Amino acid sequence: MADINQVSAVIKNGEVANTVKEDATKNATAGYDKDSFLKILVAQMKYQDPMEPTSNTEYINQYATFTQVEQLSNMANSMALSRASEMVGKTVRVTQYNPDNGKTTEVVGVVDFVTYNANKAYLNIEGTNYNVEDVTEVFDTDYTDAKAVVKDFQEAIDNLPSNVDFVNEQDHGLTIDTMYDFYMNKMDKKARNMMDPNYVTSLQQYVHRIDDIRGDEHRTFKIDDTSSTKKEESKTE
Figure: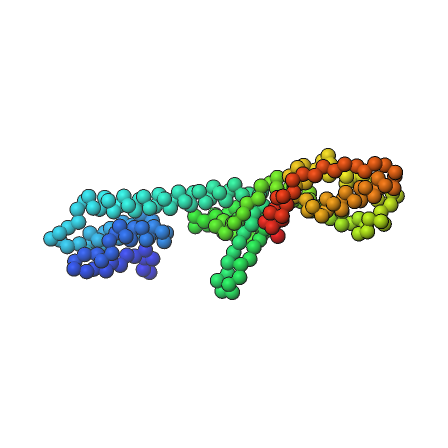
């Protein structure tokens, strides 16, 4: 069986047509190792013009060039592997382009673990591996936690009567008091800033409705800067 790394050289005027310096850069990118380089070097020495042999200095320079390219490639692989390891447990967005149908698909999920194959890192999200190079966003843990809190809180508001006039003390008083206390005292500023302003307005209307039923003064509301809300929402939809 032929050696898959067998080197064939194109000889022109007693010399290898493609210089090793060019092949070193090209082959290093394609995944060639030092053994492949040495085979190319032997081919060049074998077919060189005996009247004008290549100097030792030129051979050394060629090898140095290949070594530099190899080191840069190894460094890039190492950085990619390190970057992938840091994503374990975090929520990421993976964007993939399919050239066959021209469509782009996105997956958002938590990285369960990382696998390595042929110096490439793959992130496993819900049982599927994705190339780390396809990751377009990494979400901070505090961000994803706040996002989950906001989602649950807004769903709780949706469960209240759509018409505030239907709110009554017996069925909704305790629930609205609890939601008001959570929004004012337990929800952190990041989560409040991510709230849809329409939901904040709705909550305020429900709270004031209960205040009116009880004959109490309207409770005050803590309104944080919601200018980032739309920006945050657009990133996650």
